[in-house]
Length: 256
Image 1 (cartoon, one colour):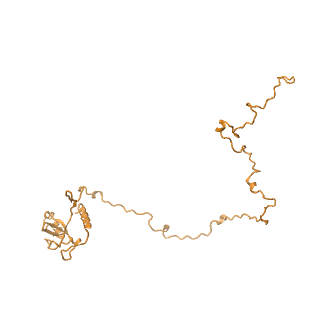
Image 2: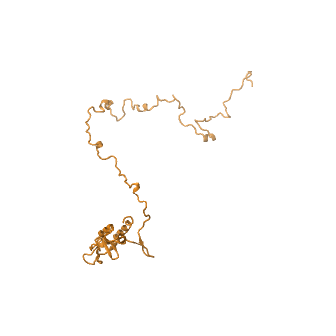
Image 3: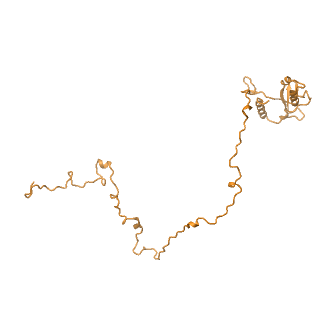
């Protein structure tokens, strides 16, 4: 197109971009109302955050704190007297006063750490028998003899028979004395403990084979009191007597 006879001149450009000349929001300061704006978060905050962009010389906490309330220095209702300015005094002690020059004399204790007891406990050492002190040829699985009956209770056989001396007149065949405590009996023959051990060792009156047939017995003085009569005053209960019999029967498996 030609204007005023000038060739090569074009029309001035119009301020229209992308079909419109209105204000368009730009990201990230503003958000567009489309799919992109829904998924992307706009920038919220100070735009210019680079170095040198802060007005610290104008807006600071120091200016807000030191801001005078009035030209005279006080407000309505305030004190008009002279202000007292206190000088800061450092009350910390000097390096030479942290520790006294004159130290107190320390009295030495009689024992270290004021205690004379042993610091470490002495544990008792286990003293067991030597390798050659064990009996290898011993009977295993020993059990107390018991009397069984069909449908009845099991009763253990006592190791020592208890004889009531008030009902039976017992006397030793060797010394003719009444046995006290433990004695030995075979049928109607009775030997006290002292005579039995003497003849078993020396075989003076009885042979050792004959003495092995005797069985140990005991009088009832530990559980009964007769006081010269046939009446019985029981010292211990039947429960305690049963426990003593069971204990003696078990220990007889290991000691004669």
